[in-house]
Length: 617
Image 1 (cartoon, one colour):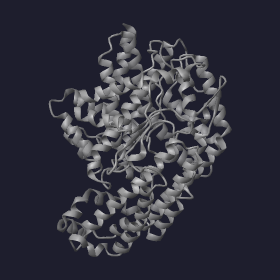
Image 2 (cartoon, rainbow, N blue to C red):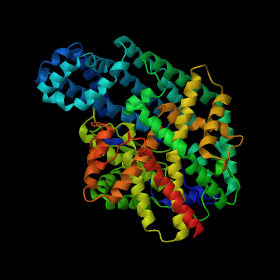
Image 3 (cartoon, rainbow, N blue to C red):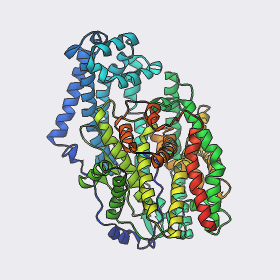
């Protein structure tokens, strides 16, 4: 999912905020996981768990060692039949895992949730062990034989995109026993360290002005209009992070070393190559993106934060003032019903079909919105499996940025519904395009709100919030990527202390934020709460990729004749069946052109220009 959310400013007095805001928001939905299974101990879940185990073992018994022969056959003995059965197993096992995972993320502090998630994950790892041979054996078949099989068998030909993607993994594939060991050891290795991170973070408590707050709520205080409250919140965050820094440092060191070992055995040269491979994007394209963004730091973040410091009457912003509200920011709470109507209206103006899909999330219990103890912070859209439907998690506090977050995650949800038609093996979209629909949904919602805004002060506040969101999505995420690159490179030479990691963090933050932000003592531990560093190293550049891409795509939409919506839906429906270059071609876009990224960055620069013009008027 997603980077930690950037929350909007809190508009209530701190001592009355919780109760009054909760009343003002209206009834917030909680998701209904019954569409996956009615209960953990019911016959449906237990029956599917048993079926998945039996079917996985039977699949191995039938097909292991026989795939090369199957390439010369058709029908029930052919490769197409093996692929069909494998996809059915992936859907079934994915449903089981999604049910356990979503229940766990609803409350990560509940021991029963943790045990159920761990036991289910262990069972799934066992099934994955039975199925592991499939991809390894397919990759040992000669390309010419595989091509002949697809020419002979329409069932196999259907899965050509998946098979071609699988072949890209071939150079980094180990022998079967090593792959089995890597898989089984993941339960007590990376997966266990990820769980420790999740549960440690979920149990953090922050004392602030007589309240005991979870992480999501105390981070939200950094959006308060009161600068003294923001400072106290930052101090509380830094204090708790420092108290727990040894654990987070150990987790980070262990997982970085674990990745280094895996990369070395598999033959990856660059520390981010495995992520590039899974994203189906060339390393030089990511390098060009990162270089373009870093070159734009002075024109974007440095320039904007200098303006913001002036607006707030400061020579420099403190690091805790980075997302402070402007004086012009509206103070009303956005109710859940208003948020729903805003997003659905913006989606509907673009394409009624898009709004119709998004409406199902509200009407059918596919969203979990309240802030609750133990609940995963931030937001995400989980695709589950094509035979079911996605689920969206947000932590809704009634801020304008929360509306943008809702629009973002529903964009993911719409994408996942549309791509589901490709089936369990080919519905998944590489991260480089996975953020396209989400950021596009955000942009539609922002533009719809901006178009109906007539008040100059309100327009300035909206533009400023959008610029900050784009800086957080592009500049901040590339800075995160640079932090990871430096950290993983340094880790190859030995274990890093908390102080060393903090120094890397502060250096990268200073470069990206610029001289208008004062980075003082206390900020050196703030790397420790970013979940993507733990769960999916180097994921973060996908956000910058998606934002810049959508900026260019939206410019095409603004100037397009009829037919843009149809082409856009075809892009979303493709799932993982096409390379991003092929999907962008109908829009006249080429992400492999180094100048492509400057086009996306110019939109952010244009919004800053508009802010400056408003400031002068």
